Amino acid sequence: MSVNKVILIGNVGKDPVVRHLDKDVTVANFTLATSESYVKDGNKVTNTEWHNIVVWRGLATVVEKYVKKGDKLYLEGRIKTRSWEDKDQNKRYTTEIYVDNLEMLGSPNRNAQSSSSNTTNTSDVNEPQTTEQGNDNEDDLPF
Image 1 (cartoon, rainbow, N blue to C red):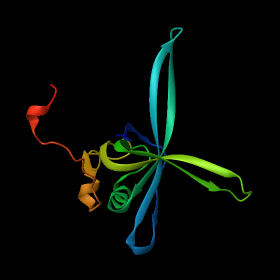
Image 2 (cartoon, rainbow, N blue to C red):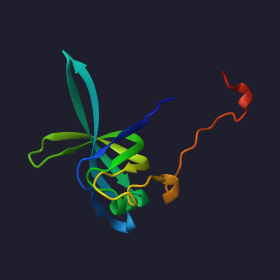
Image 3 (tube, rainbow, N blue to C red):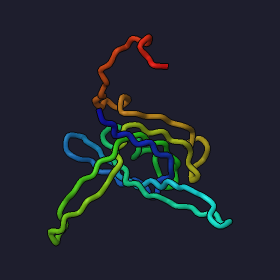
Image 4 (tube, rainbow, N blue to C red):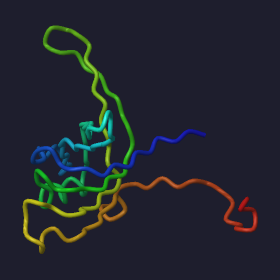
């Protein structure tokens, strides 16, 4: 068994770039910043990690309508690394987070009405869901 699950809470780095592809397929791309702070030698140090976010289909339409630079989001998804050749035939790689679930936690750039919490996941947008096969008998739980 293997698991590829990512949970992030962070701020959108810039307005999403949304593309409409063939057969009414929509994809949105944006960056999300997560920060970690600690104290070193009496000084607060903050490290920011930037994540490349990819959102498909109906969830991308939600992103197009409601997500803007600075918004705080809760995201669930999976890590994917892809490669391509640039114009000089050099092999390039990028690591992205493919989002399955999105919750808007608030937006510092907009009024309270639009910053209310909204939850959307792929089951709301007719995306195929994966299910795990398992025993539904709760008596077998180890706790």
